[in-house]
Image 1 (tube, rainbow, N blue to C red):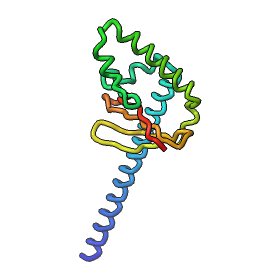
Image 2: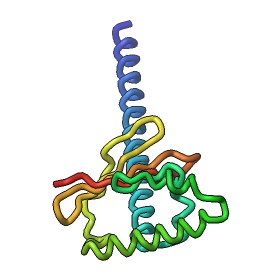
Image 3: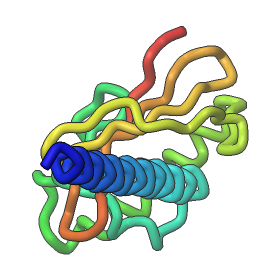
Image 4: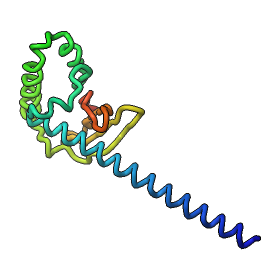
Length: 151
């Protein structure tokens, strides 16, 4: 009887450890995917890539404290595509004019999550922190905010 309890306890411990390991691997894979999504979307922003436009929640977008979504939502439907293209071009130019490059952003990492949002951060050359906020949209993510934290 004692031996049976011991084997049962051992099996429960092995199963529990295995399940916990799978959960950790799932979390790591999920984090890596979220960081990769932020990395890809921000790279498209910096490059003024119009192909990134569908990965942006334009109606909710905030960039460095400015409510871009407010401006976007006030536009007539037929003006929105031109706004997106112009905004991406201006963002890429401003980013380049600042002396920063996409490759100068280092240490990309997941820094926050809640039910629908993730925050991915990268270190800037000046010692500050770039924060990218993504919102879950079906199986993928869309950009809702680009922020900067001072060094």
